[in-house]
Figure 1 (cartoon, rainbow, N blue to C red):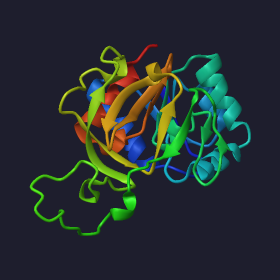
Figure 2: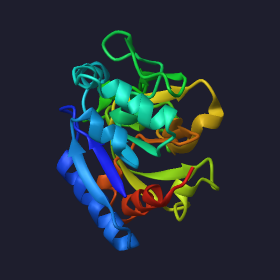
Figure 3: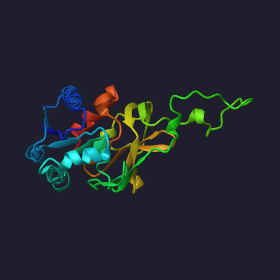
Figure 4: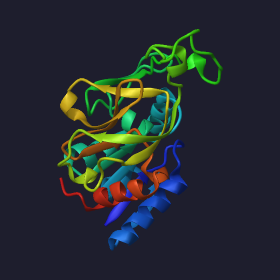
Length: 236
């Protein structure tokens, strides 16, 4: 089985490749993992992974700058139905539009928009005292404001417990996030997992043969390897 990890100049490619190789070995799967900028390799792959770190527009620009790559992704994922995994901004690129530093078109495979957290991140790192005489903080008090970017380990809430890629993940599963923008889907059924960060936020989205994680499975230790192994076995 061949896995193509798309190299368009944005992503933790080495760590992603190592995580896929390790997950394949632990699952006993004969898997060839290739980091590639060649659209023909993507077209021929049994599974496709689109990583991404940084700003939405920069990632889209890098992807679109590879001649034939967007068409190859569409052929592999949409026309041929190959299992597809987007990671972090790679997941966000599935949206209709990203609203980071202006509006920028995405692939449009999962209708929705990528928007900034509105959580009072300006309070990050500032020390404040509770109101005098208050023995319990109001939920809206700045001390409880969430920081932006959302960075670190958070517990998943599985919204689609029967999804094969989420098998073995559930209560007390913690995964690693780094992001300032999040995916707001038009169809709530496209949200497969959530995280509570000042309210429910999409942690995984998908439909048909498409799956995306806002968190980084390659940085999420055992839980991440479980998800990658599930993806490698997935037959949508």
